[in-house]
Length: 478
Ligand code: G6P
Image (cartoon, rainbow, N blue to C red; front, side):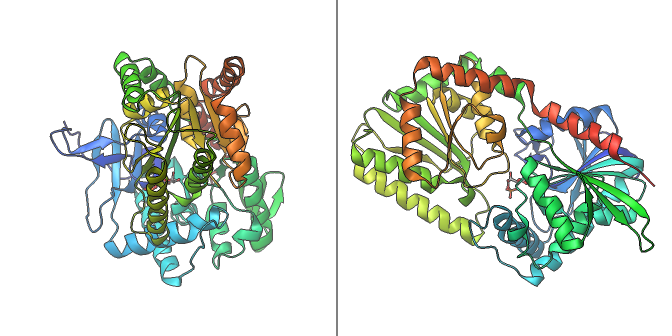
């Protein structure tokens, strides 16, 4: 049932993100051909949207297609069109081959191309114009993530009446690395136009403030940045702080007690030949996730005979991601090769070393996997937060299970009772895996309880409330 079309200028709360929070599905699976995407952000924000005159501005995921605004499950969605060229230059190029590797400790070499930067500016302008057109006077606009760092500045120029928040879901690099970006000053200026700039970890906020001081000479006092005009009077104050994102705890907990999902978890164990220990990795197939480090450590344990395929099995879900970007293609080849070699060497007719699944699964299957896994392996080399770690903890209602967690994830700040590892240290990683495999029930439950206390009191709802409340008190509209 479609409601009347949205009036421009009538929304008092607007979220802007590269992707709209819906996926296209066949009309057999939905009334209007769209389904809400899985993920905490939309779960947290959908009620806020429904209770206010909310709208979401974003790309609908297909190139060269103009779509009119539409409604879906109480949300007003405003699609922004991207041409095939823009997908290549702005999305695959500047966003995912320049900013993504640069912001993740240059694990892969970032590429700097002026044509990519031009497309990034042009597309950011388009997102800002769409938000400006949608916003009512004095509205709140919340811009999400690294693809849209210039939107706060373009938007403020068009609409000085708005209260503008920005949240960076990925790490913000130290100035020594950020310095490489030819357009570092422009990015800082783009962000500083927001009233509140949120980061995952305090260290990300501190990195940003150091870069603001160094590359645009910003006056930083505590967490505040004062922007002055030519005469030296303060025209705008921006604040940077950490707001660690979380997950939709209720949904995961509800799924984790559903009998069909518990049965499915049992089935997974049986299908794997009932090994004593199931180890699980769940990641987008991304070079930041340390998948090859994890496989190397596990392969060495099998090779030495510390583990055997009869007593342990690893499931690695690697969901397809950014497949047209070169470094992702290379990673896929590397992981495919490693898994092939390991399985060739260690598999028996009955048992496998690594059950490698290059697919995406619905959240129900993910929760069944979390329930089936004795040991969860999160070995990112750099990760803004890592929500998989938090989901695993939320699913373990009986306080069993062990989480091996990289100290280079934002989640390590909150999940201090995980078995923390430096994934570059393969011997340390092997030791942590073995510790997790043999963790005494008492210790495992003590650790899990402590982690659950943190997650259960800090869900994504609380995250969005914290951010929006701080933004409301911070904003100083002209
Ligand atoms: C990360 C980013 C998100 C992004 C997601 C999936 O979590 O922080 O902004 O949407 O990866 O990547 P994709 O390129 O498919 O949107």
